[in-house]
Image (tube, rainbow, N blue to C red; front, side):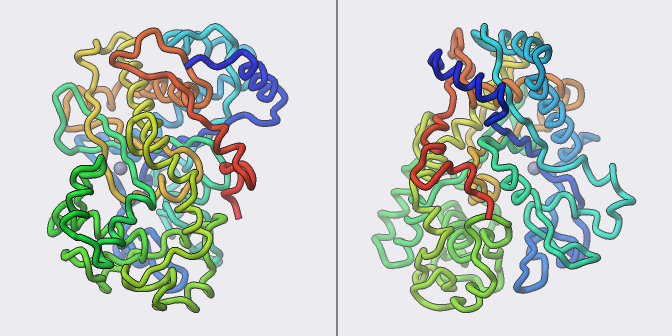
Length: 443
Ligand SMILES: [Zn+2]
């Protein structure tokens, strides 16, 4: 897409005067360790219950490639490339990088780039040895010495009020020999509403069929005892009422509580513990303990039903998954292109983009930014393994260019295998009645 000259000039002026440079947060997954007992060292701290509800997810390890370390390294290198946009000399260097990927003649605008976490636990082991996972948790957590609630990664991202967040993971599930990549996406309230209809006695066969014939059909199975549709139902239960469903997909499993996740982060849409206590278990309320009795009331559920969340999570350029899906796909397409323009791959040997992972993922749900969430590589592929081990700077370049393209657009010469180059329609979020959606996420 061609950005209009007026818009380009306006953006340059804004960037130059530092009134409003777009913000991107690179969010490398993991960082800490799965320590025992998780009730003391885990993640997903529930203030009401005074305990962690989940183990710390330490991520993939494969023959010396550690996900938390590689993803941080790539993220830090990508940030360094975008930091070039902070000076005139740097902008000239960055313009030359952009020119490898698309038609770039004008001076690039500035982008403020951030990392969502420090390097992994090994780096500051002694400073953090009483609570190794402190800087790496996704959700807010109590300071072990003072008891004060500290920001986890999701709250740190929201405190920056970014327009774009790029979450980076890798996986060691099966992949093609050339390597594999995939986006990680989550639907909106609109899709989860199928689950509510299901428990409230809708035509169950028709609802199962509707999901199975939709773009969301390949639901992620996180518990092997649950088939695909019950996995969707279990995630819908977690999304709505914080509990798993049983494998029948209808009844609450009271032994598996996963928290009211929107209250475990510090942002504009959380309810206080007092509200949770006063409404807990009530039928027709937001803290009902069965999905049939649940009613979406309060600021978080108003947000979930509103238009910006449809834009972020449904429909859009990829046909489904909204701006989040498009942003994730562009990140992957630019990462592939990076290996081609830098001579490591041809279009045929570049990693394949596989089907997305679909579930009720936390980062794309609990931020207002457009959330590109990707599995960048599969370490089971020898070629991906080599890319991870030795060519991180190439991924980083692809990610930096992707961020720029998503925020400002980068016209492509050919889009046959590669990025579309169209900028996100950020204006619709920015000009929303009630104020800029990206800048109203903080409490
Ligand atoms: Zn991961």
